[in-house]
Length: 320
Image (cartoon, rainbow, N blue to C red):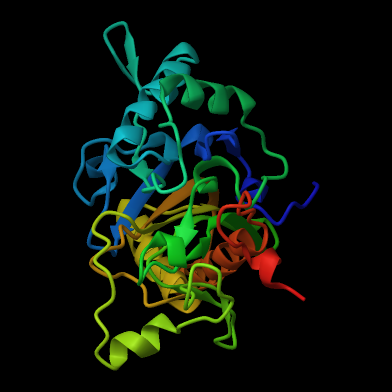
């Protein structure tokens, strides 16, 4: 099997993007070929979701068919209809009488600072058609197309966010993958704490203001209600029940804290969903820890691959 260092290395997981570079927005769909047990953890204070009750601890639905991550803020939630239509056409979902009803947890980011268009159902349907188990484009693609990070003084003083992915196989047969859409209030940091992308001192500046340090010393920053989010998806072929998937998602939230400072603020809609799409055995503690490491890696990869469209600096623009 080819290895892509992507969430698609997990058997049965496909990813499809729709990227509108001209209008600087997009969406990303994660398809589960045979359905997946799923659980989620919401760590931020400003989430925007649809059908996320289906991945809570006591919901009747036991499997989901896809996850949609999209730009457009709350308007982007309507794009989920395109995924629903695609899955219904494929005969996937809960069969009630003559109708297949898919379950598609959906989460949005606010990308309206850069974007000129909102993702819609047709875009989502096309992303489903394009979904593959191959390499996943990173950076300014899919739901990460219009993402921005480092917003303590507002998006114009921040830097380009994006989408990234990573995977790991700790034992024969077991695979864990992560995908992250990075549109955070905080700075994105390397493993040694060095800032990769974040708030700058001026719109044209290259000097970081170190948001976490500023907040600790009493600087309030700009209110950014609803403007910030990091969205994570963990997938594995380990066999998990609903509550175990929720626990892995909860532990994986640590990956956001590893790579973003500060994380889980009132202005962030941070969330992680875990998909179990297999029957391999795994230690839950090891699985959750690995998921957090991979999610942090995916966040950093998304930043390093991003393109600022000549409007806002990206990590690559500050190198050299």
